[in-house]
Image (cartoon, rainbow, N blue to C red):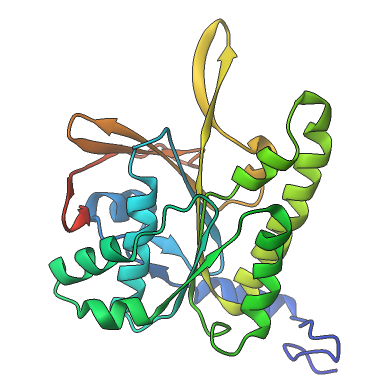
Length: 250
């Protein structure tokens, strides 16, 4: 089998040089917020997983829906995996219209999929690869990535099973993202933990989720707007402040 071509099983092999070249040519999808783009080094990265986590009403779903609008502006198809019943097509249309796009065209480029349990969420990965209507999708949004896992594997005694199932799922998502150069945006909840006697909010999924991420953005409300902080960055970067309006997060 030649390098860089599909095997009979559907897998692909790369030489080391091909893998390096693929990494160098990966682009970004702008978030629609200048400050956030600057903090992220251009936006959400192709072929990689970006997490946006924060408490309720911090702007996570706004950014997730906005990402599909930004993708539509580039002529991309998106898949929005909705585990929380939070996808609002009317909000998508509003953001698109306020940003000078045809709202009907933007809506036609987004496939929303409800995933009410772990099995349904896992099946979406296969469906994206196999369904010719959505296989060309360049953006995959999962809102919220850990919700089904925490509901189906509750309690401390099931943490191992939960994290194991989450790791298997994320591994499939990350492989698909890399091979097909998809942008993957994961929204996530936070949980309160105590560190050195101080209560802090951390993203659900912990290190299991973290090892699959390229970047993780922590959101919080900042008055009438949003404060975004880049977690676990190689070099510290100033936080980004953004407003919320009919145009989304900007």
